[in-house]
Length: 113
Length: 110
Image (cartoon, chains in turn green, brown):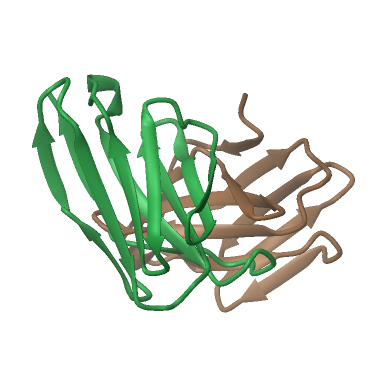
């Protein structure tokens, strides 16, 4: 998985609680992405980062926030988890803006009860 | 609004068959079209990719056919094997973002 780790790998939480997912890379890639994967929807971009403290919204950003204080770490926070946020979350990295390939982490399965 | 439409949703073939997965797009600004392969419990991994100035690209048993005028591209898997059983995603790239299709679950039976 190209030097990408995600933690936790599995999490069960209750509606209304805050949740933070972590993506850590050892590749020194500039771009980092958070996706969610749901049946029938494929992979949808939540937020992405193009450098330390530089982030932007993706297609399905409502209810999510991100932070990137170091090149290697990209955090995804659900401020108040809802059942609709039950999903598998993938982090991806890319070398640069013009680089074509995104490398994906192993994923985090989140269940919100 | 699905910018990249993928079909079929699922596909079952016998070993040695040639499954074909199709994708269509609308935005002519897309400039790179990858296919990703995903096994259960794993993240997607790049399988093969093509640029719109090329009509076909082959890597081993995997071939992409690209029709720029029709805004369609497809993945062909020659001599499919049970180990090819996975979910396949097409995607299209615009600037720094990938837009994914909804995925095709392929099962290859011995």
